[in-house]
Image (cartoon, rainbow, N blue to C red; front, side, top):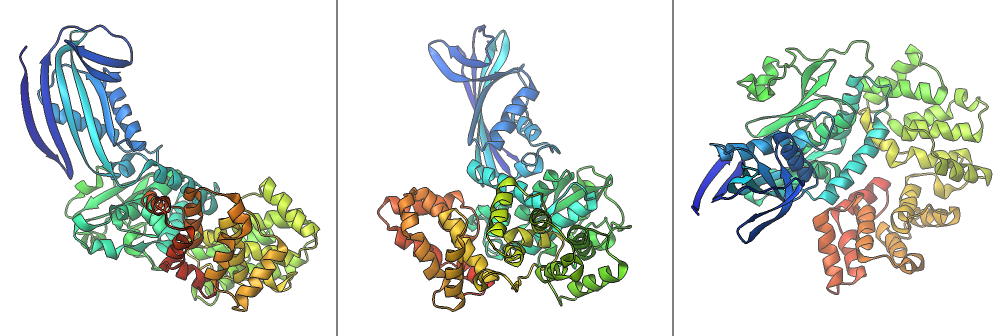
Length: 553
């Protein structure tokens, strides 16, 4: 038996590929099964999938990458290749080809890992007189599968709130761009560190969405995913140390650099831009090769017969709340107020519901609720919500009290952000109890949903709202009473579920895998739940949450 060993180190872009080669002569092996365990002499090389064509092998790699499998091994039947390194790298490159139908594939998947290695064993004539390889890839990812699954669920929910089927492609792009630039901040903390010292989560859409901060790769990744979810084709392009998106609207691609438009409140400089001299200069573009062969408009997108984000927001209130088109004077009046920051989304909506025109309508409780759901949640009323709120109204709760629960909701904030509008918050007068008509009531209600996992009863909501508003308790004290209440203690939730609820309460987001493991690990080694509680309640995030509700932490 002739046996040789060759080792070569190959660099492909930023990906380190290590090629360990073992060549074996082998006799013909007969097998028809997809699962295959190669044997040479008395040695078995393990049972793995067997592929005899490139598309199937590529599909295998793509699926395993999406599922965040750190090690991918299979047998591959192919006549001996003179450039084996290129062959293995090409399979990965093909698995990362842009896939307009799959938001978690393509460009998003290509930047889901920092590096990969591969090694293979070559069996000459090892399968049905054909050359056989056993290939093993190893990948190091930025996020786990559970994080990606959580993000997928959250983004589908968000898109359902800010996107509807009646929108044009431009309106969908605008809504998503508005939400990202209003909610995400650039991660200067990590960006200013040497690359080897950065927390790699900053490169991900996961961080951009949940942590509300990321570098350009995470921000463009979030934009990429949300656009594909909405049916808008786009790509991520790179130049030097920066990346952004090119977006297809009406068959033409335009530049959209959400990173450089963060926090500009709709006063965008890099939205739907063509390859103008100013854009090329700002982005140091010396060659069109960065555009991957796509045709990019030579001029900026021109809005024709499209309402601005603010105008569309106001027009929507006329249509959904009043059931008619806006008159020019009214559209201009409310648009000017919002653009000048003299009012906000919640206040504007409240004025529509308080208007004589709306109040003169003789509508049923069910129709009233349907309008609330469409206005503030951008969706039809679900059966559970219908039964709950009809029960509240039937038991004497006023419509203004119900309105307050919608107008200060997180769902309404997302709708406002999608139009580039500051959500704001309002106190709804005339509700059935003074304790359930403002933002503080929203905080109290949040304690019930995040910790007890249920809606608040009216008496409890009134009590805690009154205590918080009178400053007899702080946000931390109120939270402590819920977390260590008899109801919650009796629920006997696991350490993992305990920590997940603390993330929702104190961080206003779902957990990340690393953080969850850290806190659960502390509990498993004897740390008390009370100690973990104070670890969360002292966070900067909770301080900002309390501030946003107008209460002391």
